[in-house]
Amino acid sequence: MASSPKRSEYLPPASPRPTRTDSSDEDDDMPRLSEDTLALLQDFQRSHSARLAAFEKLQERAEARFDSLGTEIDGQAAEDDAEEEKSDGDDPLASMEVFTEDWNFSQFWYTDLTARTLTAFALHPLVNVALDLESLPTPDPNYEGLPDINVAILSAPTVHQYLTRRIIPLLPKPVQQKVHPVLFEHDARFAVFGPKQFVHYDFNAPTRIPENMKSRFDVVIVDPPFLSAECQVKTAITVRLLLSVEQDRRKVVICTGQKVADVILRTYRSYGIRCTDFRPEHRNGLQNEFRCFASGELDGIWKFEQEE
Image (tube, rainbow, N blue to C red):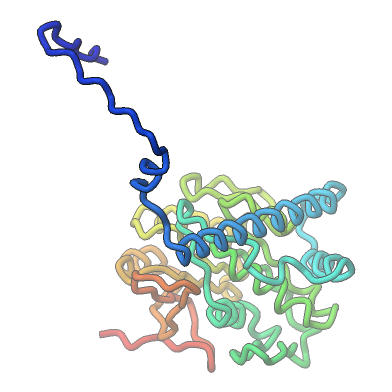
């Protein structure tokens, strides 16, 4: 780094700094926030502090609860965790409010209706989930003869939270035990869902997943964090590793921007992926035009768009 230029000895001496007799004059020159703006700032700071305190408490409870648990997927994990929370009062994970969106992770939470729509597709035919937010999920009358559903959710924590805290606890216990969701997510905050439901995931290392997760899942729901072709292709590598080898049971859903539609259709061609008429929505809005691509249709949920 270059040194600062020295003051020339030929410059005239600086004039003495004037003496202030009233320090309030200097304060008056400082910019001030209006009372309304200051009140909004204080409200934001209080709200942020409250959410941080709530999450720290939640994290402490989660760590204490999961210390003695293993890491194998357990069909009752979601239901057991929710029941334990209820025994302590309201379930803090029943809402995404405790998790603020982190734009560094390109996080944008879905609306409840979008999360419910994706959940409905994932659980069919074992469970019917109507799109009415107030309606209860109803198991198929012949659920005992239907296979379990293993659901991998990549970079879409809103869907995982909605499925595990808003849908599964409302099902009869024998049906709950047939649904096995796992969240693959980079944000370590979601480890509070427990080691049976959370796997740390980085799309830059698409093959770095536990061996016991490979070829395990019938349903994979994906929302790649970035709209670059690189992110889409690397995420697709992970999807291929996670999907069950039983092709007749496999279902794949990708929610991402319209701008990468060509990449999605080309990359997932072998799964029969097509663009649907369902438009995912986000709680705080999103400027990018979002689309839902899927390997199948479902009456009352979505249809394939007509190809031009």
